[in-house]
Amino acid sequence: AQSVTQLDSQVPVFEEAPVELRCNYSSSVSVYLFWYVQYPNQGLQLLLKYLSGSTLVKGINGFEAEFNKSQTSFHLRKPSVHISDTAEYFCAVSERAGGFKTIFGAGTRLFVKA
Amino acid sequence: ETGVTQSPTHLIKTRGQQVTLRCSSQSGHNTVSWYQQALGQGPQFIFQYYREEENGRGNFPPRFSGLQFPNYSSELNVNALELDDSALYLCASSLNRGWKETQYFGPGTRLLVL
Image: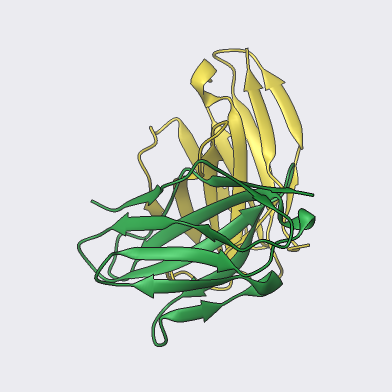
């Protein structure tokens, strides 16, 4: 069965430091992978997605993620964070074959400190 | 700003009542999905509508139902409300069905069931 695990519920980091938010998934078929960000009292906004091709995906706001098929991971990275990056980040998986639904992880709260 | 709006923003109901939540998709988007996001959790897929027909459903009971209209609006109806239905309800529209499509989320309706 499809599942998504975000390994850290909270990640505190100082401003201008690098950050990695970890995501692992399980699926018996090929998947599409997504990262979304949710700011307080707002809906989700797509940061980036992996469909096929290059395993390194660049998104908005300086974020990037790398798809690792052998480790079934899709970790999100940013080399230098800003206070404004403080938000909840969700990893999500959709299966390529049928089963039209997207599974979200429980989220990682990124807290950027001055 | 995703161009997806939801109403109302907040709602309080009592157990056993019925509720209707509304969503207005981006113009031209023929697919809408609904999610339930409990406090501290990731969104859970409820169902998806494509061209006014249900196109997939998550693990939610039949008292959760929906409608999609030709004018890019949609509704989520929940009958016989239970305390556990308290959550943020998100709708997301996409240009087409298929799970590689980018979903554009509304800000959500926060439902409290007393």
